[in-house]
Every structure is written in C-alpha cells, then in structure tokens.
Image 1: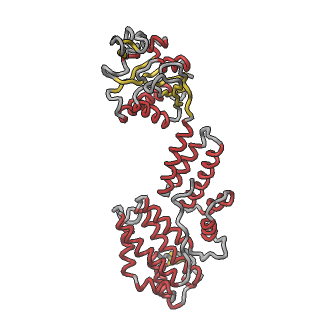
Image 2: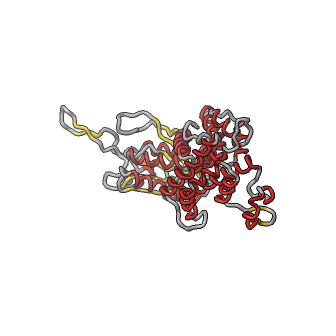
Length: 425
C-alpha cells in the first residue's frame, strides 16, 4: 500500500525533513506559498535556500551576526527525495483560507483518483502560515482516508520549531466525531432523524473511546426510533423502544395509545400524529407533504368516527347497513357491493346519521371546502401548483383547527406529543 504524505511548508525546513525521514513516504505533496517571501523556494531551489539568514546586531561592536546556520540545502536534498517522488502545490495568498482549503482539497481529490483505496494518506500541518495549517487540518478531518499529524518538539522561540521534533499522529476521530455530533444535533432540530442516524452510524465505524461510543450508540438508537415513528412505522418503533431505555415516558405512553396497546387510547391518536407529522414537514418547508397529511388527518377523523360510533368501516360500507331511508340516495355510489365515499361524502353521511361531527362540519362547510381546495391545487393531488407556507398555514388553521375543536367538543383526545428537537445527544 502506497504511503502518501502531505506537508505544509513554512520557514523552517527541519520539521518537514524530519516528517519525511520518520514517515518514509512513497510520495510527498509539498503545500507551500509562492512569492519572494514564500516557502516554495525552500523545497527544491539550488544553493542554500533553507539556511537561517536571520541576523542580530551586537550592541557592543555593532557588527551583524547570523542567529543560526546560514547554510541549508533544499528540503528534497536533505530528505533525499528525487523528482519522481514529490509534487509542489503552491498558493499565492497563504492567508486566504478559501484558497488554501481548495488547494488541499485538490491534492486529496488527485490522490483519491489516482490510488482509489490502495494508499495511506497522512497530512502533517506543522509548517506554513496558521491559515495553511488550518486549511490542511480541516480538509484532512473531512476525509475518511486521511490521517492527521503534527510535529512536536522544543522551540527556541515562539516563531517556529527548529529541530529535535518528531511527527505525532493526532486523534482526529474524536475531533471529527464532535463535528458530526454537532451536525446531528442540527439534524434533530430539523426533525431529520434519518440523517442524524446516518451521522451517528459513521462515528461508530471509527475507533472512539468507550464513553463517547456509548453516548453515540444510544443517540443512534433514539434517532432510529423517531425516524421509524416519523415514517408512520409505529409498530417497529414500539418494538425498538421496548429494548431501549427511552428517557421520555410521554413518548412511550403516546406510542402505546397510537398502537392501541393502552386502555386509555381514544382510537383517534393517529389523527393527532398526522397533524404533528405535517408540522414537521412544514418546518422543513415541504408544504405539499404537510398539506397532504392534514387532508389525510381530516379524512381519517371522519372514518374513525363512522367506524367507532356507527359500525361502518370506510371502504367496506354496505348499503343495507345504512338506515333504509338513505338507500335510494346512496345506491348510485355503489361499486359492486360497497359504497365508495370521499372525504366530503363521509362527513355528509355522518350528518345524515345525526352525528355531532357531521353537524359541525355542515356548519363550517364553505370554509372547510375552501381549505380543501388548496390541497387540490397541489401536485400531490389534482393540480400542478406547488404549495407555499401561506397555503399550509391556511389549511392548518382551518382543517387542523376544526379537528382539534371538534375532538374537544365530543371529548375525544387526539393530541400526542410532538417528536423531540433536542435532548437526544
């Protein structure tokens, strides 16, 4: 497996040479700066480009003296690298983070294209400007196959490491994990449990300490539960919840009510869950999705009432099961032996059966139909116009408000807690 070393080059050659000699790479990329005062000339220029030309003036005699050795061959000469084993990548402005970062990314992309997976890459950020070091470290953190190193050694001053240093591998996975955990927190805040779960899973693919591993594993399990819940896979979420110690009992109780596993369930909890789901979709600006869920909640509310109070299951309503006085009116709706009824039809039937839900719907029919028309505009229904936030708010206030007020009027609980935006990790 080829060993690739990326080195940021600054004013001191010794750390760079030591990194090459210690790592014994097959190929080296020198990341440096151009210009008269740049570090590019120290890499392969003839003569003594790495000599220390700094001077001080003697206070007594006034003569100037070199601080260090003014003689110093080029880095590739000291490291015994021939032309086939290195490449120089220089930037014009070593204090421009974007330019430096893109230069390093270009190196990493080139390595990935040339070697695919058959190489070991180390980025050593000891040399160069602070901006160059930050760019190299940042790019290495973001790449899976790139290790991170820095030379550690004594300093004669605060300017640079002169000699006696040795490259030390940095535990980049702890740093990378913290970055991904922060990204996962933001994903959870947006109700994007699937992405958060993916990020936590990536962390667990790398060596991290036991305490962090336990923390991330628990967070991943919680995200998996709420992702399943968000996708209406309530049974799977409930099964997984039983094996995990979920810190919020209100979610355990709510899921049991949705699944019909609680004696306190009203049977209408899925209506509230749909409204919550719609709010989550709207939070992420998926307004067509959100409106479609509110429409389904409105439809489901009537269907559940028809089934629970009148013994008629939507999609399997028999004409002869209705009061005889309604047979003539509804026989034209028969498809085979069953009645086919849409949302408005089910509420009309509830009205004709004397149900209070039907009466309340009839009282607000015009307002309800206007809101339902918004849904019909959606590309997910019968139209081609994408819905916006104003459309969602109008539908939510009208249909969602109707469901909440009506449920309260008939003493039926539909509310369930909204899924969490924080506290998972």
